[in-house]
Amino acid sequence: MLAVASLPAVAAATSVDVTVSSVEVTPAEPVPGDEITIEPTIENFGSSSAGYFVDRVRLIKADDGPDPKEYDDIKNVGTIPAGSDRTVPLSVSFDEPGTYDLQVNVSGRGAEGEGVTRLSYPVTLTVEQRYPQLDVDANDSVAGVRADGSVTVANSLSAPIESVELTVDGENVTVTNRREVLATVGSNASRSIEFDYRADDPGRHRVTATLTYTTAGGVTDTVTDTVTVRTERERPQLDIDTNTSIAGLESDGTVTVANGLGAPVTNAELTVAGDGVAVRNDRSVFTRVADGESATAAFDFRPSSAGDHEVTATLSYSTPGGATRTVTETVTLQADPLRDSVALDLNTREGGNSQAVTVSVLNGGNAPIDNVSVRATSPNASVGQALVDRVAAGESRTVRLNATLSADRAAVDVVATYDVARQRGEATASTALTQTPGTIGLTGLEVVPEGGRLRISGSASNLGTTDAQSVLVGVVDTDRVTPTAPNREYFVGTVPASDFVSFDVYAATEGNVSTVPLRVEYLVDGQRYTRTVEVDAAGASRALAAGPDIDRSSGGGGGGFLLPLAVGAVVVVGVLAVVVRAWRNSRGGN
Image (cartoon, rainbow, N blue to C red):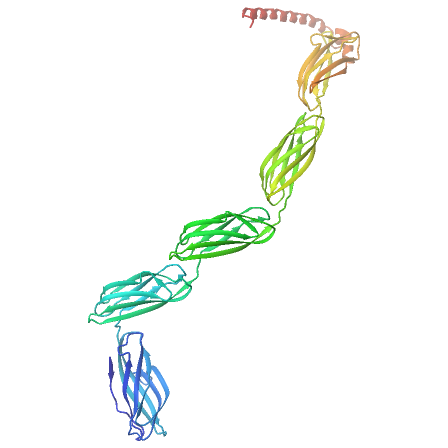
């Protein structure tokens, strides 16, 4: 609504006759936010004797005191000749609906410098919210990925609107459900419509919503709202992880696909390739990777040489909109040179002809060794072999090789062969095996007189490292020494290596003798050995020759009493033996 009131011009000089003849307002029915153009027409009548120079045209708030609010101000408009007019556009905008009282002020002077003339013209504007409002909400999106948006229709008119149709379209943007019929939207009511859109190219894109409706009075009108969305070239993230690698050695690696597109990806195919790197298990397929989730694929790789090499992962996938995308990621891995360092540590267990060599395989290199075979050779021994599956870098494995010697000493050469980084390696070491055949010596010998004879006690000791079998110790019959009962000889049997067995043998002597000869016989590895040992018997022989009087100095008569006592004991033992034998016979010989 526009209210215009003409006021007569007040001229400072009688030679100029001017006025504001009219004011045109565009648009005639402004709404909040519109830029309103107010164009006063300044007319210099033909009755004027000179031109009129317009110094200043202002648009101010009416009745706002000596320092009113100013909306627009145009200076030095120029001279209006007599009989002519000039239109001066002023602009103003109001964000809120309502009625606004304004005033156009014009000040100027005659072209010949006459006094100042001031003109004023009142303008009343009514700003009304007459259109339904549209609010388009569309977030930033990812190229090739469908995003969600919404349009809110708000009817602020005093009556319902009918035949309401909403369409959404975009600049280089594909909208899925672009058209929606709302039928009727009541007064002061609102409706929200959701839509999907997809921009295939990155950049800034305009999305426009258009609302067509019919008012209660039958007038069909249209209102639009446009927003700008930003589309980024987002992609799933690839993370390549390669462990420490060694030239020629196969290592493990992984690729992790992280989907942060805001939508799932499907038909994802991942391939891995390398520059100077052989890749195995290089292809993986994922049917679907949901938004915010990740998937991991493993692969094996082997650098051909030491140094830097590139490994590239390529992911092809489909977006929900059906677009096919590809993303790649490349990392540089450093392959260390192969260090082959294997040593053997040998230990031997001494014994007889059956011995063992303990072999520790020490891997001091930087790569594991596989298919380890440990063998030994010797000209004087038969040595076994052993297999070791795998020895990791910096670790060791121990095996035992049994050996059988055919001589007292054997030199043994040990060889370990293995696979490392697709090549064959070898480590060697040597040791010696020795054996001491079983040898029987008589130790701890003691000769004492006993019952008119000499008892020789001692141990048959094996001083060798092999067993001695069929060991027999006996008294040698000489001119003055005769083996006697109860043990003329003593069968010791088997004496293990580094062990002993005790024995007792008896000898009768004629006169004093200085030694008693003992014969020792035994078998070692099927060969019989015989040796004679002279046992010192001088003291015992003299004591035997002296007879029972040897103890007279220490008490004398005790010996006469002991002899009958000993004889009585022998008789008692004999009687008991007869009784026991008879009892056993009565039991059937058991």
